[in-house]
Image (cartoon, rainbow, N blue to C red; front, side, top):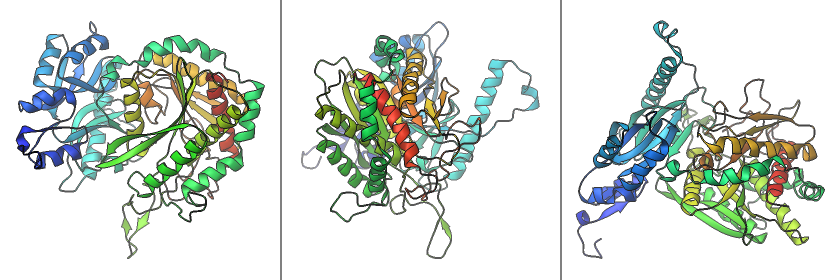
Length: 550
């Protein structure tokens, strides 16, 4: 601004990162959390967080029609009847004129929204135990939200940290956290994995462009038994030794790059090693002959990158995505200062090897890319584009995959299905079990299409993991619904499934890792089983390659 010779108050900074908006305001600029609100910022009109109720005689399509032409941007679709949005007073007025009810919950300013799930049981007062089903559900949701927010507010005791409740959310509470508030670091007691979800503004949350695509693709999922040639290729390339080698390099057992002595300590989004791992993964995928791109996004004032590697097919009707998350955390570990006193986890310094979570999934994506490369070298060619995507900052609330899926929706990408692998090496013994998660709270065609995609994975298992027990977990009751990167694609209407070790399903004692989010999640841990991981990776690879026409 100084070099341009203009006054700060004549400029509007537009950005969704609250830390960046706060910095812009410190410089005297006006700020807007989304381009839709630029004119409002010029006029000094604030944007608000608002809960929009969709009455029975209105639909999400009706809401979209108003939002598309007004100062309204959705950030989360809780159900067909409730949407959390950013909106100006002008946008709220347009919604109310259209028959919607708006509940304002404070200015957006320098805050961002999160969904914090609380898995603790809720005890209703005696007076509410005999009320109707809907009233009981409402009471439970209210009490759960209050309990979750009480925990969050109590855990944030720093002078620069503030958080406000935006009301009940699916399984927990919506909160607006001020810039600099480490909301992603909070862990509610008894919380299941993936309980924190950062919410990003995106008009495609209402339009859900993937819905039109899944209607045309779902029938294909029923006929996806892998060919003998594909089974042979998968068995040859995705071996326990290959899986071990990849995990060893990205979890600090072996040097990250052959010929270089550097060993990484962590892939946490706040660790300096994270960027080194991103570069190494991008190089490895490029060396396989794939077209590699880094998809950048902002988080806590940092620029992070997802890694995408593509084998494009000219005139293909769609792309198959094979995915995992590349970052790690050891936030559940115990750490001590030089005097032996307990201290919080320091993601910039403390080790977070993440061999299982999600080094195992990352290794599976790399091994599948190697498998495809070998098949191409032998003269085979897919009918669909194949993309290998490694998401960053999954541990910070699915930030990387949400940014990627939002960009894919804006670009009009056609995606037939997304197969995510998140923790596939943890095995304590007994009957090997593979969980296939397709559940989503998002209504519409995505539900049936994702279930069918999960069925495709199940069809591939007998050829490459015959001794495995399969757990197909679907519907809104799926314990992994909304809790891994596949959910970012569900939100936009695409078919997606997450495959993992026996970790989420609590109907029987789990056999997955006991080192979840701890510094003990290493390749040398007794629960880390590369034979088990290779079998799951082969299953997903066989399903994905079959879907791609190989």
